[in-house]
Length: 415
Image 1: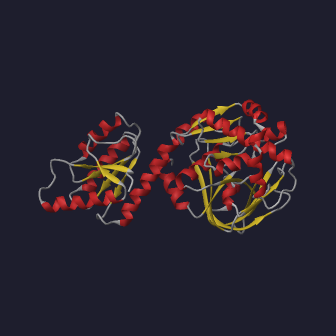
Image 2: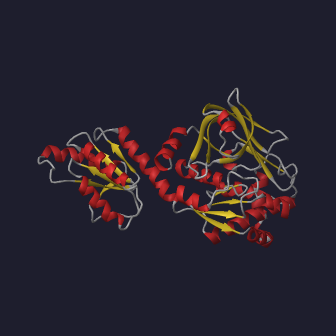
Image 3: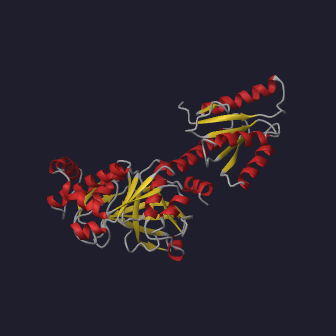
């Protein structure tokens, strides 16, 4: 198995002598190795991957503090992951030292193994390591904001410093003038292959002309140039200005980039883009951003709708015009029935969260809503929350039930 983390057995002067203790510790070493760990010493650490401190006995508190102080010289702001076991006062020592570290503002927790064969405990260690890796990855992420947030996003335009402080990513502002300049500069010969693939995969092409299709491919290729220039991991675009200024849309470009693994949000909505990015990194699945267009509070159901959707998560799609403007190209996808999770980040410091689970019960093609539409019946979470304490407009949807996983990460890293 590929090395995923390192672990140090923290020892004290009170380490028991004898083969029984050594055999017991050897079993824990092998168990951690089987889930991707490598035993380290203070001299053999790897700064690029996480570390776990395994408390062998009581009396190890100061030793762990000393080891962490050394590591902090090269790895700052790292969560403290401590593993305790049932014998030799390992647990009380773990609780004491974590309490001290948390008093100093450190993030971390005690992970308890009731034996070396504790499958549940070992799985918990793996999940926590993933959680902290996601947090670490987000701190190295660059989100491009092309233009400014749309004027109507009055609750979804946080300070860039708020996103950095709470979630980790850097926001990279990019002038809308730059994308407007790049779009007409896209070489004509780069367009046909992409356009033909888009059209051949569609069940219908209703309103868009070939010029419309060529223009949305230009938007996509111009966005790729921006991504490469600014080394972006994700982006969000003030896309309605493309409609008003160039009579084209970003719907295809945002869909295609998301399918390629570059999270791309609409309308300059940094809050929803952060939600999309979080879901992608934690769950490894492609999310969808949409408007809560209609709801049924009595039956705990709602309709989501938007004019773009990653084509990789739909059964099929048609190419339509953009709903509000009747211009450009919108994507009308059919989402499969089945389990989904919904979320919305919000609050002044982006530390609030609405989570829900449910089922897609049907897709729609109503002409008075944005093109891709899905009706969702909630089994966990309340529609009434959206009316009484809304965190903003757009919701993020991901296929499958992931409420506990998302909530667990949230409580550990953000809340």
